[in-house]
Image 1 (cartoon, helix red, strand yellow):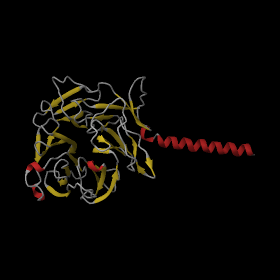
Image 2 (tube, rainbow, N blue to C red; image 1 turned 180 degrees about the vertical axis):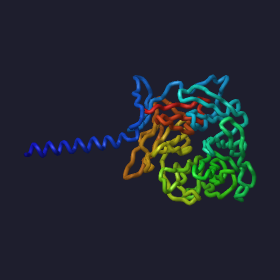
Image 3 (cartoon, rainbow, N blue to C red; image 1 turned 90 degrees about the vertical axis):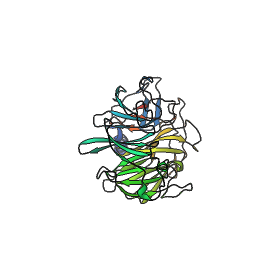
Image 4 (tube, helix red, strand yellow; image 1 turned 120 degrees about the vertical axis):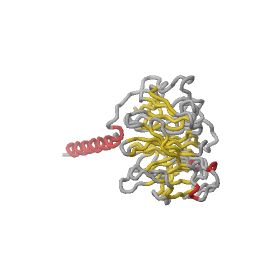
Amino acid sequence: MIYVYISLYMYQLLYISSKINAINELPSSNMKKIAPKPGEIVLGHGNFKYRVVPNWGILDAGKNPVNDCHEMVEDAKGRLILLTNEVRNNVIIYDKSGKLLETWGHSYPGAHGLTILNEGGEQFLLICDNARHQVIKTDLKGKEIFKIEYPKETGVYDHPNQFVPTETAVNPKNGDIYVADGYGANYITQYDSKGRYIRHFGGKTSEYADDKFNCCHGVLVDTRDPNNWTLLITDRVNNSLKRFTLDGKFITRYHLPGSFVCRPVLHGDYIIAACFRSTDGSWAGSGYVQILDKNMKVVSTPGGSEPIYKNGVLQRQYKEDENKVFIHPHDVYADSDHNIYVPQWASQKTYPIKLERI
């Protein structure tokens, strides 16, 4: 009888263990597993590890140069669209193998933010140009549709040069556009789909305040809760992501000590973000990538230190990358195979880095 009880107990333990393992594997259950080869560089932690794909996307710099590789998105055809502030080819379009497909754009010297949106069965781009002090809507061939100039309707801007936009986000329900003036007055300005002003909120502060920013570099419409869409906005100097309602009311702050986040990117239930620097921000070349789960807990930091929580509080993170894969990551894009592409700012005019999920 004792043997039977022990056997049943062991069976229950094995059954529970198998269920826990199955739950832990859910994020990668539909993923193509690719084991790293000896000598390959692997980054990340836990279930979110990646191998660095050598020489991905490297082009002939004489023909297709880059300066800062600022941001990347994917269109409906599976093409990867890179934005650089190199006016010989502001937009470089790749396939997922890193092959060059197309280039265009010669008039965006401050090309910085890139968002793709769907409208009436077509796709368009929003380009933030912080040298032109504009947000420009284009089609996928580069034809300009309209421009958003400095928001004088707000009453907080005296001249166009005060408006230095870094990023946009689009509400997929109604097409509303949110512009983050991260290098300017640090307001978030909301427009309708035609570029007509609705409201603004935020503003710059050197002292921490929940409803203000010190470099609102990135913005995202977080659609993970179908009943409560919100905004996630970077407060980069304060190492934070902040959640607001869609009409600009502060909800909560997620403190990410040591991480200077550029913009949050939604991938399934996860947030992926490039951090261009770490620790106190003065350490050049100290960037990495962060992955946060649905509860906004950091679960992996490719190129950085392992995320450690003590009493529910994330401890300060820092660069931990003996192979020096990253210099200054500026954006991320995650494809349907859960691979991550990382464009970089001020990184010796290098092309994006591809991380392949393993």
